[in-house]
Length: 66
Image (cartoon, rainbow, N blue to C red; front, side, top):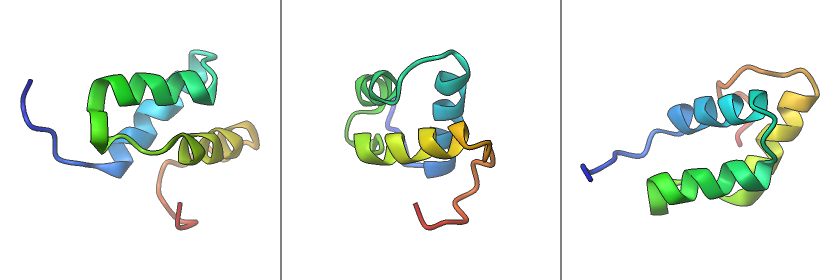
């Protein structure tokens, strides 16, 4: 596996794909952890982003400091 440089925006883009696939935040976090290991965001952060998506905020820019 090639080295992965942590990119939070990319991880949030993957989260929104998982959200649109009807995955739970926990499932999405497991997928990110399996794929990116230590570079993955926390499960809590995944849940916070999923809540934003559920509330209609689908902008993956980190305007709220998450």
